[in-house]
Length: 281
Image (cartoon, rainbow, N blue to C red; front, side):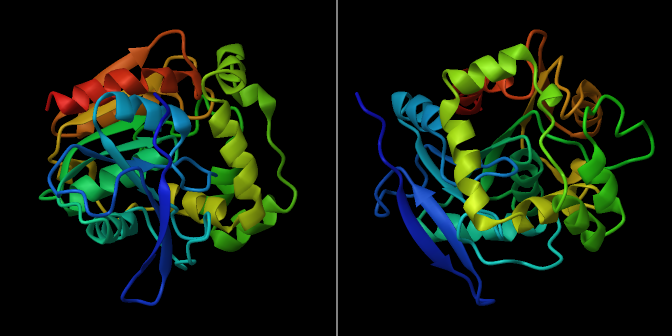
């Protein structure tokens, strides 16, 4: 059975911004059903990835998503922090007639999935974060194990410094393990294609994400009351395993799945099992 094709909708916010959003089910679907909000990585367009849509369809789950500010057709939001994603996510859910939903975020989407649960616990039933970065802290070496932390180092110096780096920065293939490249060549080829599409929208989204990650998020992990599944690849060279351990220790209701043979991309193979975990909550 073919996967449903997400429909796009521009959500107009009270502050004048627009968010490009996506939905795999009719807008008129009844609220309160099995709905998953997908939070995209950095950089991507915001459209839900085909493996996510397929796994959700097999489980009767409706997927909604949106492009964060400056990504994929969404308006900029100067000075945004991670917490600001919470209100944007709720605005998207409201536009699609969705009351309560689970959240799943990969890589840069992980922190933003947590934000919704911290700020709107009445709306978010559970969270999965896959290869997600932890809030910056000096309690451990936050950068240790990152193959290419230059962007985050620059982001700590401010947006202008991060923007200057974006003019010369290049992707370091050593960030990925062979299993990551195998995933991009196989089941997760849609991820690589979506990253390529995101280039048309410029670097502002990625710059603002990095600045948000490397500075105070606007909420504490202790505020996330919803159950959280933290999924981490043991060999991840983008977001090291210490980040997952830190989140496990500081989230009130967290479970850790450490994937011994996975890196930053191949860990996404657990998405169907993670959906089952959410359905059991």
